Picture 1 (cartoon, rainbow, N blue to C red):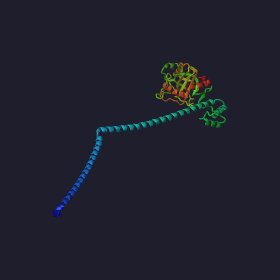
Picture 2: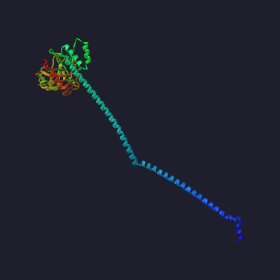
Picture 3: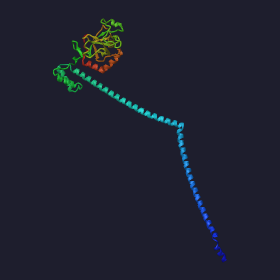
Picture 4: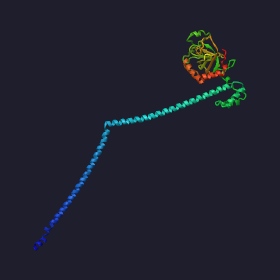
Length: 365
């Protein structure tokens, strides 16, 4: 028993080392296995990362291609083009409307300014006319009374347009007084000074000119085939049967700044009829009150050249109102009415008739 145990303990080294080598081999194999497993896991992780990247790139590529496909689609292009066109139209219309509104506003502003200027000028002209009429009314009388009247008007502030001139006149001419009636407004008939822009007289009926109806002209022993005023386009004399015209004294109209072709308003105080006429012919220097057959009939008269009216006819002549186009009754009535209204119309006419009743007296013809 003892020898056997000793023999075992004393076994050769090669026999005792075999289990240790086996253990080392197993350990090496395990380490190799673990290393390979680790390498495998790392490779799979890298593979997964690469696959993830590839998937992401693929998705990004698909997304980009989707937008490209959408943009390249004809329907999409049509919708986008229509939208751009619509927006362009809206913007263009907006700017066009804005520009038009600005232009219209400018026009309205200019028109308003023009109307204001026109109204201001009209008001100034009316004011000057009223002041001139006031001066004319107060310069009738003796030298002393005229100077006193003018001084009163200036001191009262009633003549702002003429105040400086009147003051200078009174200062520079202490021994004289103006007489408006004698300063190129009319002439002396032997009875009184007549203002050719406004006077009351009778009416002698004339048939001078080219008569469209020969009957009245044959009854006129002084008939002539010509009138001083002629149609500017045909150079023919006026027709007394259709054209309402008046005669004014030769050589006297220039002083009143009246010329052939100027318009007039004529009023019959008995029939209360108003007519418009044109200055168509000349009368002798001291002759007042002549009208054509057409004018006489419009005033309610017979139109017979053998019958004259001795009074009650008011003549209102508008200087510098000459008509340079073909003369017709319509033209005379239209333009004459405008001038009569600007002069003051029926209200001014009645005021003058009431304030100067002596004007209704006849001027001999």
